[in-house]
Image (tube, rainbow, N blue to C red; front, side):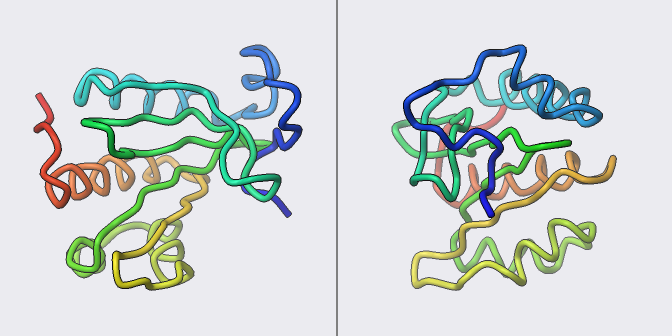
Length: 146
């Protein structure tokens, strides 16, 4: 099973196909995009990442480092946020919702941290992701949010 809905490297999905796949979570997708663009002014591209297990994603970078990637999926989308061990500890104390907590618990711990893949399933998920992005920016010393 893949993280994203679009796993054919040879064919980039259209905006219409992305919106159709995301379905009922399209407003959450748009809200998160607006938040990222307004608060971080990142570089962005739509890219096939990490092979068929992941697929096409909208990737945001700041200062040459990954901020986050959003993977359109069937009936929603999944957000990747990579956190350092210290940021993971802080995130565990934030009282995050079920999706974010499950992503933290499921992610393999590495010396450099964890790659969280958070499926957006409920209204509070976008707010949790916003908090995790702030942790990422702070931990990596990236340009502060406006």
